[in-house]
Amino acid sequence: MVDFTERYSRQIRFQPIGKEGQQMLSAARVAIVGLGALGTVLSSQLARAGVGYLRLIDRDVIEVSNLQRQLLYTEQDAEAGRAKAEAAAEALVKANSQIQIEPVLTDVTAVNAEELLGDVDVIVDGTDNLQVRYLINDVAVKHGIPWSYGGAVSSYGTTVFIEPGQTPCLVCLFGADDGSAGHDTCDTVGVLAPIVSMIASMQVAEIIKFLTGNRQALKREITYVDIWQNEFRSLRLGTPKEECICCQKRQFLSLQHKDEGLVVSFCGRQTIQIKPQGKLNVSLAILAERLKALGRVQANRNLLRFETSDCTISLFADGRALIHGVDDIWEAKRIYAQYIGL
Image (cartoon, rainbow, N blue to C red; front, side):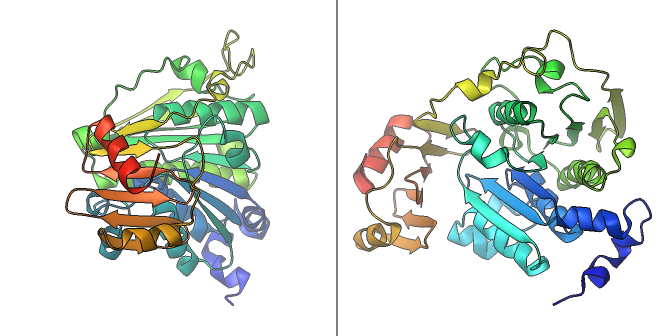
């Protein structure tokens, strides 16, 4: 086993952290939502920094188009269609076997958000989903947990560290979630890997400041960077808005929407998620045996990958499935019913 002081010696030598700060990192618990471009950089840096417990939450599987910017994954992972959270955890254990890493292969929804996010010291946003960010904000404010907002697309990105009671919350900054879904994504306008690493690194810097007790060094600003246009701008946060329905009136609207939704279309991906109300009534191993005669099957205890000439299905242990190669909801439902049952 690698000696604690030796492993983190260069970080300990940084005076604002020192050995006491490093021990605080080792005792810290962090949840990362999304293990895509931002999430892989975030989790790698936090694991290597020695954060003692990381919960990695992601609903997706690895595709070859991810490899340009999602640094923890390999061609073999993409070929196998592995679950991101599972593959990320495996890679991180190889980098630091002395911390606890918990992969969670699921959506963050109003039903499970408090269970997944309510018992950590910091929540980290690695998602590109606005509705999930409002869920994170609700949990953070309700439980008094700081969280790091980050977004990167095209050549630009934004980040801010939100501390309930000390800074405005997401609703203060951007208004309440109105249910709209129209915004640029990596699938629609692309993304450069350097902006991902820059935004994620800024997020990690603020998280480490907070977890090591260096709150006076926190930026307290929204930071915007465009590496193509050579822009770097910051806007001072100020104080929470007196009329904010979330952090002042404590109305947690996102957490009230308990309908998880049966179908979700992944923008630009030709992938549709089917999420039944009940759980699978058979194990993945049993289902894999049934499907072997119909196509190519790869399976472990968390994920089954089934491929035919017409479709590809990534099926999770809770019954949730990603139907790849289709953009019609009814066709996705038909495929799920045909091979899995609905």
